[in-house]
Image (cartoon, rainbow, N blue to C red; front, side, top):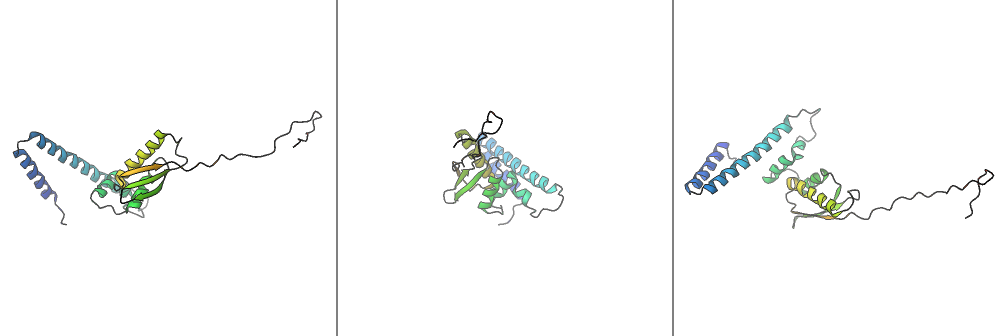
Length: 186
């Protein structure tokens, strides 16, 4: 596949917009121009983010120079959109889950259906349905950027919580009237 130059792309866009204008459908022309504008803003934001991330001074060169780019939601979504993201799906899923404020465990991804099963960590809140839905939605949002292959997220409840640790010790015995400790009968 040969790379399209900016000039070629601009000419092609103009041709399509001119054909739409010739059709006389003002609404279609306005919608097409709006789509072009939104895409230009999206890609402009992505390129600006790449430049910003690459221009940041580092104390030392990163072991993985692509790391900051791959960790950025906007850049990652652009790379995924065009099939250019160098990481495999499981790695991108792990990256998305690691960025969540709530702790979840990957319980399995079915590539055929696009369903990712997650298990809520025992420490991820009260277990209320609203908290579980907020956790699931945060995962859906993060995965949309990093792993768009995930089309649905199922959140399994956390496993049984460990019982509270009980402290077992000897009970202090009441002092005997003489001031000496008494022996408690068992």
